[in-house]
Image 1 (cartoon, protein in one colour):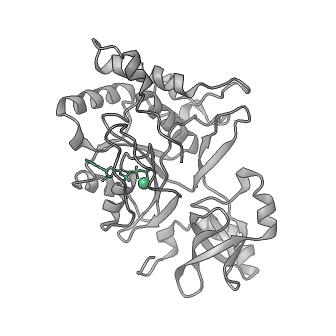
Image 2 (cartoon, rainbow, N blue to C red):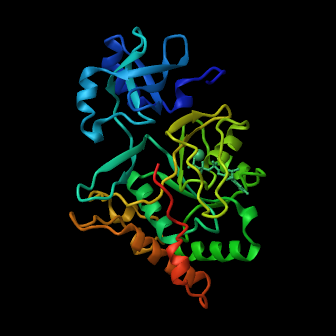
Image 3 (cartoon, rainbow, N blue to C red):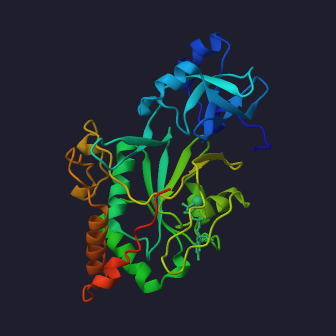
Length: 338
Ligand SMILES: Nc1nc2c(ncn2[C@@H]2O[C@H](COP(=O)(O)OP(=O)(O)OP(=O)(O)O)[C@@H](O)[C@H]2O)c(=O)[nH]1
Ligand SMILES: [Mg+2]
C-alpha cells in the first residue's frame, strides 16, 4: 500500500477523465483506478476527499450484468466511479478508456481478453536463450500495436547467455525490427534497470508481458527498489518458470509512473483489428507484424506453430545445425497457461 501522498496526476488522471467523471461526481460518487482484479472483487485506488487510498470494491448489479459482455467488464487500469460508503465499496460505472491491451483467445469464437486498460507502454520481456522466439515477439508487438501503446523489448537474464549469443540475437532483432526499442537487463544483479526506469514517466503506465519465468516480477521488484513480490526459480530441466504471479496488478511507484505485472503468457495470437491503419505499424516492421484475423473455425495447432518458429529461429542463429526430432519433442517454448 502506498505510504506517500498521491495526486490524481500520479495515477494518470486527465482533463478528458475529469469531463467524463462530472455527472458521477454530481451523483456523489468518487473516482478510482483499478489496481487488482480478484475475479469477484477488485482493489482500487480511490479518491475519498482526503487523498487516494486503497479500497476493496465490488460491481453494482447493473455493472455485473454489463460485464457479461467481456469488452464492457472493468479491467486493471480502468478508471471507475465508486460509492465509498458501503464496505466493500460499489463500482457504478466505468469511465471511457484510452486504449486496451487485448489478447485473442484461440478457438473458433475468437474471444478477446482485455489484459490492461489505459496503458502507455508495454514491455515484452524475454531472454536470449530458451524463451527467445522472434516470431512470437512479432506477435506480441502486433498486439501492442493494436493497443496503440509504445512497445519495448527487454532482453533479460543477460548473465545467462554468452556474449556471442547475445550479439547474434541483437543483430537479428536489429534486422527484423530496426525501429524497436530494445533494452538488455540482468534483473538479478540490477543492471540495465536505470535505463528501464527512464521509460517510466509520472502518470504513465508501463505493462510487462512475456512468458512465465522470464523475470517480469524480478524487474518490477528492482524498479520498486524493494522486494514486493516473491519470484520463483525456473526449472533447470524445462527452462519453464513456476507460475508465481497469479493475477494482474497495477503498482504505483514512488519515483513516478506505474507498472503492471502480469502472469506469464504462453502464447499470443495477435488481435484482429480491422480499424488499425497500416501506417500505425512501426517503421521497418516486417509484414508479419500486421495483425491477421484467423479464419473462424480453422483449428489452430499451437504446438506445430511453436515447432516451426523454433526451426526458423534455430536455422537463423545456427545455420549449420538442425533440430533433431528428440529436441523438437521437448520444445521449451511450451509452458502451462496461467
Ligand atoms: N540469472 C538470472 N535470473 C533471473 C533474472 N531475472 C529473473 N531471474 C530469476 O528468474 C526466476 C523467475 O523470475 P520471475 O520474476 O518470477 O519471473 P516472471 O516472469 O515474473 O514469472 P511469472 O510470474 O511466472 O510470469 C527467479 O528465480 C528470478 O530470480 C536475471 O536477469 N538473471
Ligand atoms: Mg511474475
